[in-house]
Image (tube, rainbow, N blue to C red):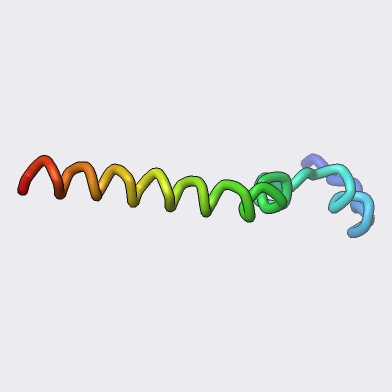
Length: 50
């Protein structure tokens, strides 16, 4: 049977990079821009349908 070596909790956390934490700092820019684009698309659809 294979025996795994114990890993220190701090070491494992430092090695792995969280995908969410790498993107979270962009949210204040991405969310308003995406909201503006969505509003423009919905308004253009509403004008086209009307």
